[in-house]
Image (cartoon, rainbow, N blue to C red; front, top):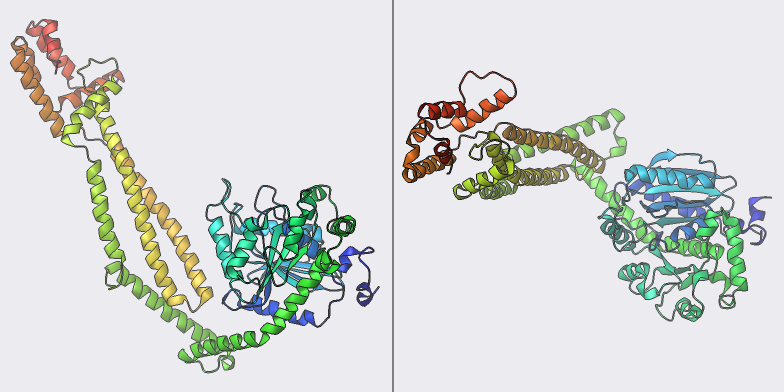
Length: 597
């Protein structure tokens, strides 16, 4: 059967072929031209308004099922995860043979995809690669090119499903990125908005309708698609018919009803052709919806409607688009002229290479000079040094606040003595007591140090990014390459900085200097108080006061070495005290009283 004859096959014999019925062959060149323009300029200038149909809907609204029914292919199914993580451009073309390919940024990802069942797998794999396997959104566009005898000549852009609040497993920025994508696509006057609306929900609460109204207040460019009509509660059909008949939220192009595959159909591997038959049977047998005109119900009729509207939109936009591209070319030629190139096409390959090399060298020289100015603080409008001074003042205050005051030091040592008390006498201040106090202080200063370093890196990166954009914004590919190089270098240096900070803190923790003048002075004062209050311990006090000021720390270390089995040539404080106490025949009770600080 020829392709021409296939167009006459009725829906009941081959529902998939019904998708491509009655399309004038003149529309294919129009769509191909628009697709080529979109591919060429997508990475250079996204502001050019190209005619397109954008599919908009909430998660689980039936958006993917509508696209599957229109294209005859299986799209990714995410279960509880995001199904569409990137904008997906689906280019459908009617042809004699099956062919499918996936590309991104004009680079072929997969060619000759064997059948429509495998397409969803390749899309999902590429989305996971772009998003690093996370439940997050990317603005990078994937382009799916599909050719088959049953397909309409149609191009659709599927945006990620709208979410109101990010779930625990979703990236928190997803909501904002989705809204930015919606604004980028829907704000263009040539965009036809395909708003997917779940029929068993109130239309007033539909997020798709909300965003469509936000960018198309009069409903001039919006087509409402009512999905899941089989799930409408009994008695609520009349409210849905009011929506369909433009009585609640009027749209110029009105509404269209579809019944696509349910999750049960997908789980049972129901083919799309069978799903289209079931859809037609549903409308024929439904007592409430059978009166809906055939051209306003079902996916085959929707495909015809969308193709008709898109072709009309393209023809209407050609004069405006031609003028826009002419001005864009004129602007580019002016840029060449500013660089001394009157006719870029007349340049030989050698001269082009030489010219581009010179431009690149000049830009890099200016970029390097600007960086040196930032480093030396020579930029008049450079906010980095001002920010550094503010950060230094704030950092000094934070560190000063974390410092242990003299009034608190003794109380902290007492608390540490109780916390670290072991078998030694209660008056015996081990080194670990002082170390505990010092380590707590180091914990307090860690947070402001890490915050200072993080803020410094962030501010520096912001200034450098602005300089990169300043010198390379006219060359998008080079600009992106510079951004990538900067990101790679920033990640490496960030790791080095935090490693250095961690090493500094570890050194502080490893070497604690415990011979503190406040502690010594307080200890001497306590000895003086005891001497006045208890004259019976004169001999023991005299011996004790004759010890060096670092005896406590030295004796603690000496006893520790002795307990560890190591030799210690110098006598410990405990030995000295015991020897002198025995020689002076001071009662043990009197010796112990020297410890009552």
